[in-house]
Image (cartoon, rainbow, N blue to C red; front, top):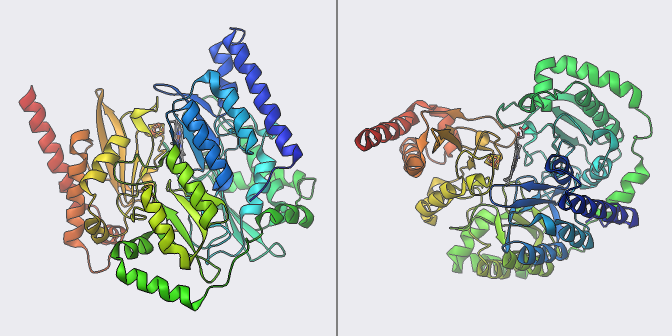
Length: 563
Ligand code: HEM
Ligand code: SF4
């Protein structure tokens, strides 16, 4: 894991001190609210429905046991003893006081953490594959380049006031676990090592009110030119992105307006000034950073441990289920990556208590070289677990509700904070998630339904990625009542695409019934071993539409009876 050098530390400490002075000026009345707003946003401090929210960055999702313990401590002393992991490697603290923010930022610096660029119109936290460095389908580990991107983009003077935020994801795997097609910029590393690695660059993707799939702008970009090429893209955006209308300001809108060919021409013109200049990466610089990501001291597996795993699987069906869902392959023989589910029944998806943070820290120390990762799906990952110790890990994780075997199943939902916290929400998200968890708590049912993604957003900003869920639920406002629009057939991964709206929106009280009806259609129509998405792709939306029509008719009848 990357460790800060004195310059990195000085930078975040000075920034924290600067923010302390800004808060003091605001509290004394020397800064008006509207003057303070951009300053707090540059430090990840939002003001939400009930309280300020601080978004802490976890660059490319890597977090140490020490950092987790610090976050637990902060969440207990300054918040209500929990936090919320987002889809882009951040932790949100929902109940802090602005007055405490400078102290929190100071405490974060003690463990090399900060909240710089977790908000505002700048280059946001760089995201990557939670299995980076250990995935069998990976060519080259993207984390050193993700760290180089972090250093390049942190407080980049030219890119601190962009027309709108830029979200970058980087991955070195064949399987797409970073939502490449729906990022402003996605970088796919091709090649095995720094001798010959190149990038495929995708631009102009995004969800939100105008969901657009990204397009490939460059293939075979030598890795040494990564920074200069990105500078060219962001310069074109900085020059021509719209600043008059925040809804039309994202890079995707510029790419759509200019067309890929023209956007690409302008990028190349800009790149001509930058290519080969000081931003060109050297092998020495790559190796300096890559040294922080050297593999840990793996041990050789024993035949005995493999045999023990098989016996335990047979003796404990619950353990076998967990192995099936939570355990992922590792490129080193005898090791596995393990998902610690933050989707236990009754838990708001992505929420983690201070006690759980401490448990994850202890598990990371004991089982995974003191480190954990954050997955896009709002779960945690222990990336380097000996297979021979999986049973032991399962027993320990179960005690703290971190071993729900639902990864990839219906209740492994992506869900935004919605109306319980967010000022922009049309409707609550967490209440819907909880109702679905309660209705579908039975593991036999979940396993029978198989792989399915259900994503919930409380408004059109799409923080819960509803467009790309196999089932998407979007909160909409109908005369100040919470209604929900349902989409079907969206998907993430290499063939990611947007789902289709299948009928009129339904009120909160009917959402779970509609989901149950949709799943009943799937069960009726599916062929052996066919996932929900496959069935939907084969039969289309028509068989599912009556589910919404029935709910709509019931709602109308109820409204008529009330009036
Ligand atoms: C509660 C505080 C939050 C606020 C006020 C907020 C606000 C927003 C807004 C306004 C956008 C749209 C930006 C645009 O299209 O220009 C956005 C996008 C996004 N948010 Fe949030 N968000 C919040 C929390 C979260 C959380 C908790 C997550 C993860 C679960 C999240 C994930 C995202 C993602 C991934 C996008 C990009 C969607 C896209 O592709 O366009 N946000 N957010
Ligand atoms: S989708 Fe809407 S409601 Fe949900 S967090 Fe984003 S802005 Fe808030």
